[in-house]
Image 1: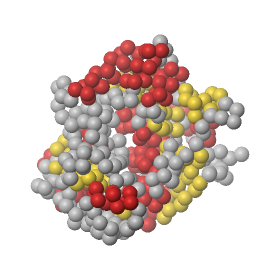
Image 2: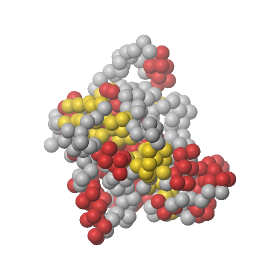
Image 3: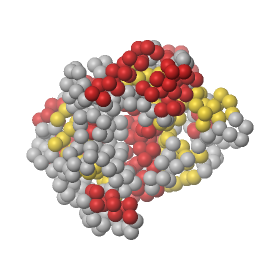
Image 4: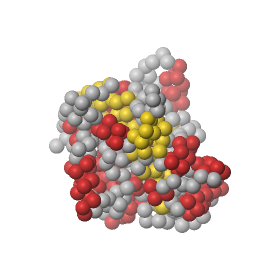
Length: 462
């Protein structure tokens, strides 16, 4: 019987099954950060249970960390306590930690792939919903709750019901100015934020095959925003070229052995999915969100739809928008280019190409926040930092930053922020903040213009 990519990876990790019930799934790699791990460590200590396989756990500090003056003590008491507790717990339990000041520190979903920790065919978890990012490598990666973090600490396994399978295909040529971020925002706008509930999604078709690994990570990152458990893309030569030679990637004979296995993972002809969707790349335009969930998105050239739904009206009231309104020329206060969705070097190269030789609008506060110390180093070495600073952008240090209001980088109440992050919920970027999700390309252009403007033409990209 033909098997899907998801089936192959899942079935290879099943330790045991409960008759007519859940399965015990082995976890290859457990990523942790300062927010969801303290309670899990405390539970183990209270119950006298040792960490089962600390060598398979990797930690970093990202959510609570400041992005200015990281060499100084953290000012916020709660943030400082959480980061300090992570360091203490990792030391006590023998866990590798890339904390503040370490050259590998960064957002957990940025630093793990760039170090070669993330590899095809793995099962990976983290106490963070956007763990789905790692599925771009052909791994089963998903977020877990605090009690499950403790379960993996204690057993390196999880008790789970196997999700259903969905395939989303996008074929054809993308229009000029359309990025991977636009592709996933379009899919979510078309299908809805609960369309993936109960499913693991495989993205297939020529559009994903032609994407870089950075682009694939952006797409898989936002799978959770359609309610899916996670997203995957079959590993191919693009994947292998990205992984090879990285710090913790297999070497020599081990590489050849792993590579042979990875090449066997793609979905076989005739394999069945529980749900399938297909889209034409030519229909996708540069996207912008107008509401308070990622599914409330439109082409920037379009207008806000109408709906009698009470929650829809509440979202528009919060955002200060009206049905039928165009967002073109709408003034913006902040631009944030960062987060685990769009803070990789490719994102900043793209933004710098828009910004080079120009000046940001004086009405805009624009933040460039690299996803890791290594990305920050690349930004500087490639001359991108000079381009951004000459244009008036503020370069921050690595961390989650203004994606969420858990650190000092908050958007003021009532202010509009074009953000390359993944969520536009009420108060997500700060109490009363109004978030519009977009690509790094559109965000950079907005910073220059001081308002939303349509990107180029819709001629197919060369």
